[in-house]
Image (cartoon, rainbow, N blue to C red; front, side, top):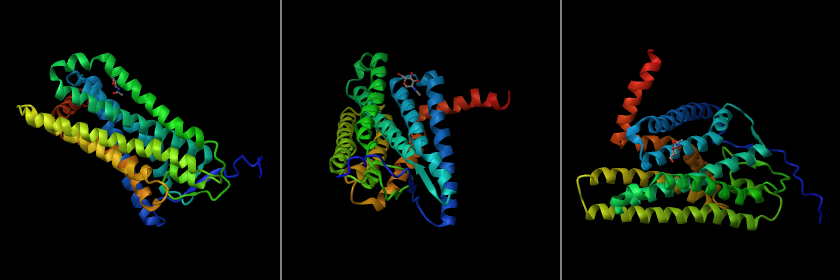
Length: 313
Ligand SMILES: *[C@@H]1O[C@H](CO)[C@@H](O)[C@H](O)[C@H]1NC(C)=O
């Protein structure tokens, strides 16, 4: 028993990326670069529209803007390095870089998960208790929801990372993905990690499954409520709800696959991690703006008032 061998001898990890072919990597570089620009522009546009357009000053849009903000942070944790790595032959990341990636991924991911729940509660109140909507979803409640999201994100990530940062790594140090993620990195530790694996399955996997089922049930209840009291506003409500359900599925689907069955099927996981780090934040603004007349109108107004005057002062 070597008790002194607690310190890691591995100081960096090597990421394998998506492909070893040079041409394909350049193609991925171009695609991911453009998608990342679209993520920044699309989500920033939503945040700016909601902050500056008084038509959008309602709890639903405040939550949506915060979701866009989470998406921006979430994909910025890994995407810039992933994009730069496509042009590098040797894709290395330091031990601390790797830990930082995982910490912030789960911080913003956990926050986003809580925010999706807050958004569902907001819609639930709007649809099932419409007369009390303004009093229930007041500014204080909204602030509490946001505080709750950041706190849950923090607890979610620290509860896993506290046990991960201390792991000893003594090689191999190859991570078969485009960024560091918990199941892949834990597998590389040269110690017994069974308890930690169970913790990750519970903390990221089962929690995702649980939230996803809860959210689906609540959206089904809302849809049923709308169909029972079909009114003139119902088609708009159905389209809002279907946007929410799509986003929830895009977010939780990959997360459940990666974390609920994490320690055996790695080959699909790296494509799923592309999905939730880049494709979901890319699709969210599209889903919310294309299907939402008010958002579209706000972006048009924004375009006329602000961007127009910046371009031709
Ligand atoms: C988040 O929501 C709050 C409302 O409580 C709002 O004031 C704030 O502007 C939103 N943040 C972003 C980044 O949109």
